[in-house]
Image 1 (spheres, rainbow, N blue to C red):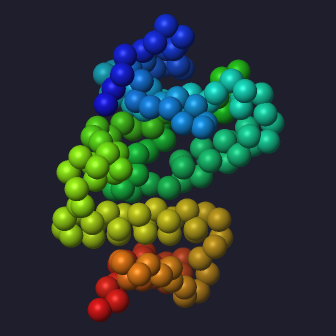
Image 2: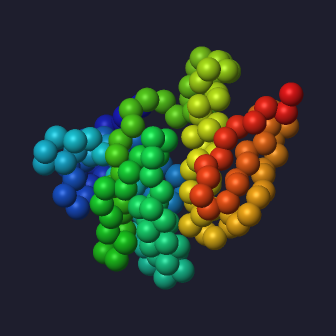
Length: 165
């Protein structure tokens, strides 16, 4: 749900005009923004106290650089970022709809036909992130009692859900 901008909220971040507030967390606030061409984006603006922390900035730079390399059907692309400015931020593609927690709270457990593609998408994102960290070498798998194994078969193949039967 998009909330109206408050008196203390910026009206512009980088090239993005802010339309409303999508949420807030430990790192900062996330706003709904719009490009000059009309595309809606999500803009994460880092809290001021974190912007002054050199260690945090290094982690934020790394997060943004890694997120630029991870892509696909199940991720919102990084469109733009300023990790060096007075108030660091990152803009990603905006995906309308409720968060997973809100959807489950409102509608109950997801049907199997939705959970399986979601699981495959999450496994793919984890595989890509692990590849960036140099974590997936050779054969390994992550076990989940509910969803089975999430195999990571090396640098060349994608993970897939495998039922435990």
